[in-house]
Image 1 (cartoon, one colour):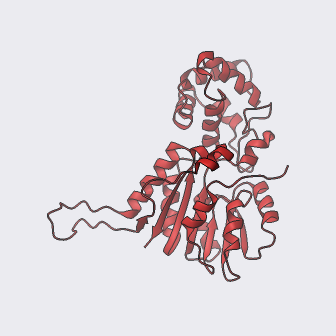
Image 2: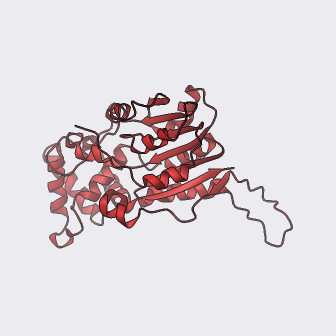
Image 3: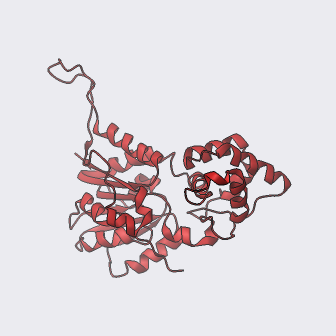
Length: 309
């Protein structure tokens, strides 16, 4: 299947990165290279683009999409490990980093990966198919309370307790193997009158995907690590699609910016607050109305930009 993925807020990201022709840039979520292609176009032969993705199929697609560019390094890894990745490449600092968080359109459409609640496929949901934890393991082995908490926190699902209870009851009879089986359990758990806001399984599938791929917990540290890896005046652009992601990014930016806690009547700072840089946009940038109409994925997207001192 062809790896199709429409980059979200492409122009806003390129503007946010403030690209220098001979700079070093990292796309930590390479995907089909929609954003990366525009970055690469703006680099000279002295510039370097580093593309990181944990999905090997995405890396293969990106190599095809970027075959005209000779200054791209492809890394099969997780952007959470950015410090180690750059260290292995013997790179001390970069001029810009882009993270487009969340699942790609290709992964959703490639139904045998188990991301989609449409059809009948094995419960997988791994972005990196070499890892052991799958959606099947989560659904069939997690305790009821843990399942309910994940579905509520990561999926913001009101009926999380009922869904978790019914999952645990169903798996006593036999192991839950497919996406269709899980969808049927979810549909039975939510009153028909409340199934008006999109597909009833959407929020639960999102929650399980986030758990399988550990998308939220390391994010705060990853943002701090990315800022540490920037050169002076380097920029970090992060697109989030979930309120928990956005909160982690926002809080990490605020801490990196630093805030003096001294009383206002003191003539100078004595609290030792240290600033690593500035938040470029006080409020998150959102997609234009036109883009939201053309690409539904962009409706929940928020872009935040940080510039290192």
